[in-house]
Amino acid sequence: MSQIFSRSANTLSKVSLFGVLALAGGLILLAMGIGRSSYVTRANEYIDQPIQFSHLHHVLDDGIDCRYCHTSVETSAFAGIPPTKTCMNCHSQLFSTAPILEPVRASFRDETPLRWVRVHDLPDFVYFNHSIHVKKGVGCETCHGRVDQMPLMQQERSLQMSWCLDCHRAPEKYVRPRSEITTMGYQPPVPQSVIGPQLVKEYDIRGNTSCSTCHR
Image 1 (cartoon, rainbow, N blue to C red):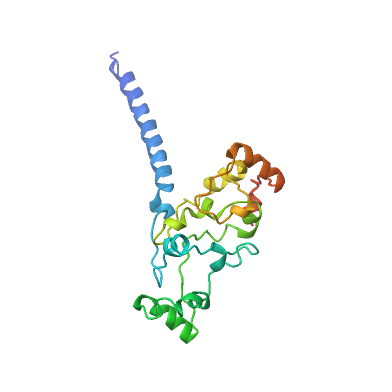
Image 2: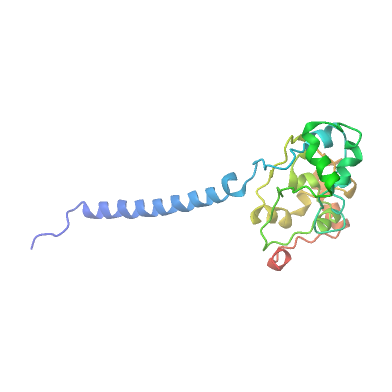
């Protein structure tokens, strides 16, 4: 009885099996790469706003503290969006006739709020509280990036769960003194490896990674 398969059949089957596994692995890696890409996370993407507000100008040039506009960041889950009155505190005098600021003047005049578009927009199934992070020494820059260098606001971090867990698992790498929360370009006075564990102990930080912490 003659052989059904040639001697090369074993080699061919092994190569085929390896090719299928390599293709499957490649597709998985590709999917993971796409899932972490800015195309999906929208990181580094400028969002159209009713007015192209420049954090670079207001924070770096004018030295305005984050909390002047985001008034509830220390006491509430939501950092707060400034009402038009906050803008007009300055712009009733400065650039009061600039065409680019007409939407601000119209909003104040007509008592109609500006419709800002959220840049850092977490999914509805994620609970995030600004005040507890501020209380525990997480700086604005840690999550939002160097807003003082952003002519237009963009989401710098991925906001994916793995990014959150990096900090929750090792908070000593990221925390800073509460007095430096809004400082852009913060540099620790001593190595972070020294001050970080001290702050974790002082602020009673517990790297909570239980699901119910963020998913409620």
